[in-house]
Image (cartoon, rainbow, N blue to C red):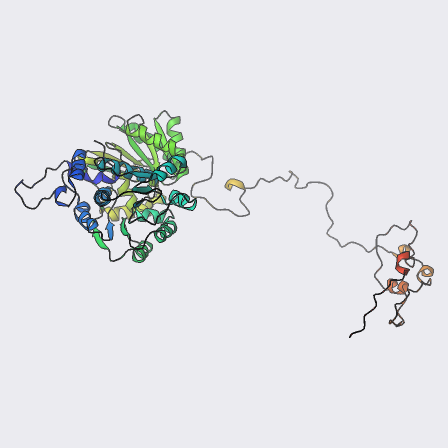
Amino acid sequence: MTISGAEAGTDEAANTPSSPTPSSPVSTGFDGLGLSPDILKAVADTGYTAPTPIQAQGIPIVLERRDLIGIAQTGTGKTASFTLPMIEMLARGRSKARMPRALVLEPTRELADQVAESFNRYSKYSKLSHALLIGGVSMDDQVKKLDRGVDVLIATPGRLLDHFERGRLMLSQTNILVIDEADRMLDMGFIPDVERICKLLPFTRQTLFYSATMPPEIQRLTDQFLHNPARVEVARPATTATNITQELVEIPANDWAKREALRRLIREAEPTLNNAIVFCNRKRDVDVVAKSLVKHGFDAAPIHGDLDQSLRTKTLERFRAGELKILVASDVAARGLDVPAVSHVFNFDVPIHADDYVHRIGRTGRAGRSGQAYMLTTPRDAKYVEFIEKLTGNKLPRRQMTDIEVREDRGPRRDDRRGGRDRGRGGKPHRDRRPADGKFHEHVAATEPAREVPVESSLPTPAVLDAPRPERPQSHGQKSHGQRPHGEKKAAHKPQANRPADKEPVDHSQLPAFLFRKVPLAKREPQQ
């Protein structure tokens, strides 16, 4: 049985028998939520017998065609809470080319792909069609599906706007909008795109809005685009499962020591390690850690947002099939992953947001299984560890790894981002290129003022300066004002220095001949 990552919170519910008897007038199963027999049959095929709280409260509201705000974490079964009633409402109608009737927005490609899998599973007894619009794959196949006409679009905001701007998509007939993981969209900078998409849809649409938290930006979005919404809030899973063994490992603040500590923990857990996920805060660290594990003989591969979509899909398929033992991932890429039976979770970095810690270790210990969760911490992470312990209400057990050799990192420290004139490229100091004696050559400028050089010998002789100069013909209408001869005017200027004395002086009274030519002036026409 394959269970979607967004449905992970229903694993326990799937194993609980339904309580009502056949003669009971009120049912606590899916058959009491107003769904059609075909949908109930599809749900039964997946193995679910009882809805989760957000499904039991949200599905009837959606079927009433009201706007909804659902406050729930990933793993509470909210995908089925909007997928099942959407299939019920879209069953009566027909799709048109390039005009979808429902739109589901997801922050990541993996979540969009898993929602598409859930839609396929629940709509297998209906004739509804869907298209998955995500980046990293060819647009030609997506365009072909849009041209044939689809009922439901499951997309990321960026790729959806790409199709719309190229005229391949019209949203004028979209009557149902689902915005999933809105808080993650805020973190990833998708809120401006979501606002633009909402303005492209009909005003009379039905909007279903799901988020784990409600920061002011998300609250403003709901106030702007939702109309008299109903609110369904499921208790946040701030407490971790009791079947997950947690441990905090204190290590020195050194990148090499941190990777060595991770390798030691993996070797210690090898007898019970089925498969494991290693979480890092940054994409660059995901690549570095995966490369380090492979170099030391571990079966590991990275997954993050900068990798090609085909490679990410292939890596996930290998991990789900058991062909890959260790998956090194970032929070965004691993959010909502449907990977059952993960035995161990290693937090290479302490998450900045305490909620992410609960989400990370929730990848293990699913459906009643036991799990192991480790977190590497340095003295710099004390503040974030305090936030996690305050959120979960538990004091994490600690142990120290002080026998790790601390080696100097080749690159700059991860927390050293200082620049300035004393730093070169890559954070390295500038190399001193001066010779040992401190001089580049023997020609050193003197500090004393330069002496004045006499220039009398280089000046023109008085005879030349006093030589008569031919007068310039004056135009009619101009009078002579007794101007000083040009030679005298030049003599008043500051003499030019450093002129070679062996050259003959230049006669400044000699002027070009074209200056003595008469210039005909245009005659002014008499005014009428």
